[in-house]
Length: 531
Ligand SMILES: Nc1nc2c(c(=O)[nH]1)N[C@H]1C(S)=C(S)[C@@H](COP(=O)(O)O)O[C@H]1N2
Ligand SMILES: [Mo]
Image (tube, rainbow, N blue to C red; front, side, top):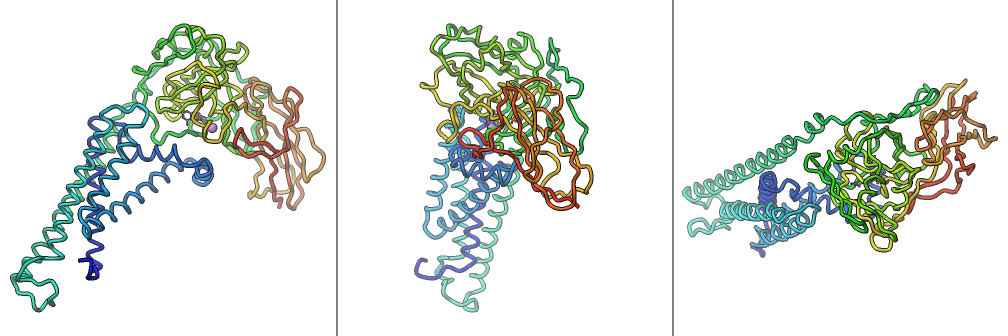
C-alpha cells in the first residue's frame, strides 16, 4: 500500500474511523466514571493537569483574554486536540496497523497518569481510562478492518488495479456489501458513543445533588451582625455597589470543575505542629457560634483599576478559636491550608492567631450559604492578604508548619510565599471609551486598604492639582470605601487620575508593578472624552 498513492477517500474514512474510536474511548470512560469514580473523567483530569502545568504567563494571558471563560476555552482546546489526535490514529491504523492502537494505548497511559494523580484519587480512578482504552482500541480495529475490506479487497476475482468496467457484477456486489458493512459499523459505533458519552456526562452533572443540599442547608443565626453605617453608599450611576452581589463576585481558582463537597461528609483537620490533631464536622464548626464579618477580598492578579476585588458580608467562625483547640507549638510561623482539590495556600500564622484580625472559616456569603464556586461548604477569609495566600475555598485541612518546611501551590509558580494586599484606588466612572456630556460629571470609584483603612482619596484632572474626593463612611477597616468628586467637564479629551492615602498616612505608590510576584501597584489614569 505504501508504494501506491493513497486515495483521498481512504484518508477521509480512516480519519473518521479514528474519530469514532476516540469517541468510543471517551464514552466508555465517562460511563465507567459515572459508575465507579466520578472525578476520574479522563478529559477533566487531563484538563486539570494542564491547568497545573501551563506556565504562569500563559495562564495570565488566558485570564486576561477569556476572563471567566478561560476554562471553557481550555476544554474546547482539549476537545480539538483530542479529535485531531484520534483522526491521526485512524489514519495510522489504516496505513500501518497496529500503530493506531498503539497511539490509543499511549493516550490511555497518559490519561491514567492524569486520573490517578488527581487529589482524592483512589485505585478505582484508573478504571475509566483503562476501560476507555480497551473499548476505543477494539472499536478502532473493527471499523478500520471493515474499511480495509471495502477499499482494498484482496480477492482473486476483483483485482484492485482494474478499471470499474473490468469488475464482474459479483465483485461489485461484494464491494457494495463491504462498503455498507463499513458504514453500518461506523454509524452504530459513532451514534452509541455520542449517546453514551453525552448521556453519562449529563447524568453525572444532573445527579450531583449538591445544589439541592445547599438550598436546604440552614445556617444558624449570627450572634453579631454587620451594620452598614449611614453614608456608607453613594447613589451614582456606574459606581460599584458597596456590597458585591454573589452573582457578580469575581471568581478565581484552578478548579476546572467546581469541587462537590457535601457538608455532611466534610471534615476539617488541624494537624502539623500542634498538641493535638483536631477533626471537626460541619456541625462542630458552626456549633462554635457564627458571626458576620464584612471583608473585601482582592486577587493578586488584579491589575490597577481591575475588577478582581469584591466585598461581602461573610458568616463564619474565627480561625484562631479552632487553632486554639489544637494548641499551636512554638516555632511554627505558617499555616498551610489545603482544599479538597489539592490547592494549597501559605498564610502567616500570626495573621490567623492575632486577636485584632478577623480571619475566619466562612460558611455564608451575603445572607446565604457559600455559593458552590466560592468554596461551599467552608472557605477561609483573611483580611489584608491576597486571596492566593489566604482565601482557600473548599478548605479541608490546616497544617501548622513553617515557611522553611512547606510551600504552597503558587510559590514555585512565580508568586511570593507571603503577600499582604497593596492598598489601591480605582475609577469606576467615567470610563475610557464611554464619552460623557459636558457639564457636571461625577468621577467616582472605590478604594481599599484592608486592615488599615482609607484616610482620603485624591483626583487629578489633566495633571492638575490633586483635589480631595468625598469618601463614604467605611463599614470597617477591612472593607473598601466609595469616593466621588464633582467635575465641571469641558468638551475635549481629559486625563483623570486617582490615588489614595491610607489611615497610616501613607500615599499610594505611583510606581508601577506587574501582578507577579506580589501584586500590581501604580495610579490608575483614564482618558475621558467629553462631548
Ligand atoms: N481551592 C482553591 N481556593 C482558592 C483558589 C484556588 O485556586 N483553589 N484561589 C484563590 C485565589 S487566587 C483567590 S483571589 C480567591 C478568590 O476567591 P473567589 O473566587 O471566591 O473570589 O480564592 C482563593 N482560594
Ligand atoms: Mo487570586
